[in-house]
Image 1 (tube, rainbow, N blue to C red):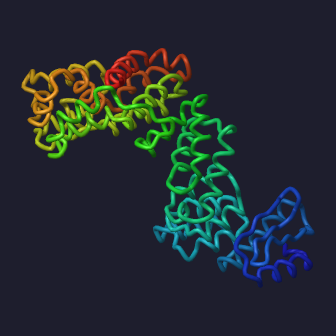
Image 2: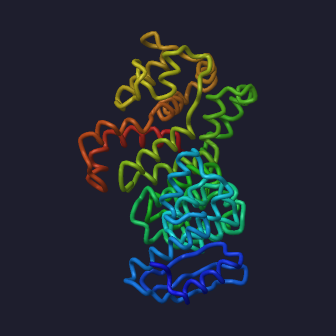
Image 3: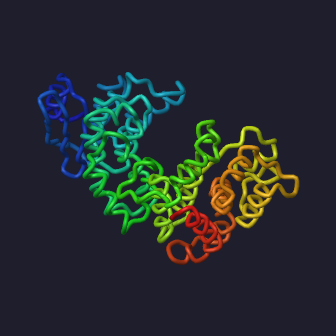
Length: 390
């Protein structure tokens, strides 16, 4: 059934202009279009039942934009055969009035700032904003700041902690929000600890509300100055952790352990700590390299926190034929009074999120019950975080 003559004429006139995007309010039967002159709209006059008429409108738009009716599903099948969605086709998808077509556009790696702006006009959602802020081109554009502001405003309504974490990571990218907005977001983390993990991931050395350096920082820095100059990784990491930036990171990481909501956030927090403290040993043998990567002797991910504790003791004291790095020995000799702190570095840099696996396999708990079940994992991590703090 063709469109009514009135709607056919209006849509043809509309599409004769340069249109960047189209959206359809199926409830009110209105077609909206983003043109060079601003927003235009057409009130539809169906000559059949509404659902069927909307399909006719979308077929009409598809024929104009893609050269064939059928809309987005037909086009996506051609995309799959090609193996990728070409950059030149992204803007055409925004003319279909299809929500899924917009989602395909915002998730495409070739999205540009102009296309992102049009897609954002078409559908404004937190999911679409997150997708577009994964593109460097969008982050560097004016629309990037608008998307970041939207995500911040939406945070109180976000129910999924993992989405909350992803949003925080994205908005903290350089240049997206002002220093005042960063500080306001930081303040929200006091009641929503998940946000702390985003800060630890994105700006670990530039956290708001810095604390003082460890009381022994200057003394240790002087003793390790030659080793630091020689880029000894243990000396560099120890001095970094005792500095004001390191102490702020450690304090924030400890705070994030107070009320993590689920396993996803706990795993992300553990990896944030591990990534910040991690020390590589390029001179170690293959077995030692497996341990550096958080692997067991069999090359499988470490899942037992007690085995990791035993391993770090073995490495530190050269027991059980475990290779001990000459670089670690050099730092041990220079600051023997900081043996506990060096062991803490060894422990934290070898504790991956896979230590959660045994608990996850046997429980779907969240909140306080999850935290109770994870106490055997939390306690040694928190102990080593505190050992490194003033």
